[in-house]
Length: 252
Image (cartoon, rainbow, N blue to C red):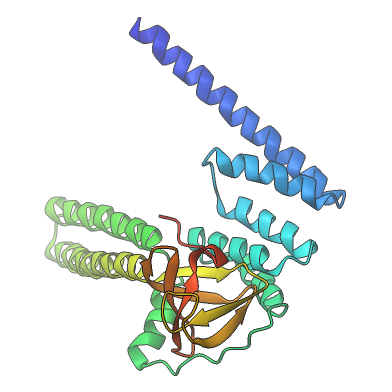
C-alpha cells in the first residue's frame, strides 16, 4: 500500500510539473506574440501554484513593463532580484522601469559599513550566503582529512593551514548569513501601486498630509496599525499610508 501511495505521489508531482511547464511555455508564446495580458494571466497561474522563480518574476515584470504599468513592473523586477540578486537582465530592466516612476527621491548618504554591506554583502541573498557556508564547511572538512592522512610535514602544514582558513571563512559566512537574514526580515520593502497617494503624519484620514507618493516608488515598511502602514522613504521621511496602496516585495 505504501509503495502504491509513493508511486501515485510521484505521478501527481510529475503531472503538476508538466502542467506548470506547459503554462510557462504558453505564457512565453503569448508574450512573443505581443499578447501581454494573456501572458500575465498564465504567469499568474504558475505563481499561484507557488512554483516561483526569478525567471517567472522577470517575465511578469517584462509583461507589465510592455503595458506601461509602472508599479507592477517594478514590483516583479524587485521580487526577481530577491530570488537572484546577481541577475543582470533584471537589474538592467529595473533601471528602465524606474525611469517611468514620477518620484525622484534622493537617498541619504551611507556610512562606510553601509556601503560595504550594499556593495559586497547584499549582492548575495542570505540563502546564497548559506550555500557558501555549506560549501566552505565541506571544503574545510575535506582539507582536514587530507591533513590527517597526508605524509610529510610540508603537506600536513599546507593542508592544515588551508583547512583552518576555510573554517575561519566558514565562521565569517555564517555570521554574514545570520546578519543578512535579520536585515531582510527587518527591512520590509514595498512598492506603491496607487497612481497617486497621500502619506500622512498619523494613521487616520483626517490627519495632516506630509508628502505625496506615486506609482512605482519603493518604500520601507516599519509598522502597521489597522489598515495603515508606517513607511520610510530613501531620503529618511516618515509617514503613514493606507496598506492597500502598497504591495510588499519580500519573499517570506
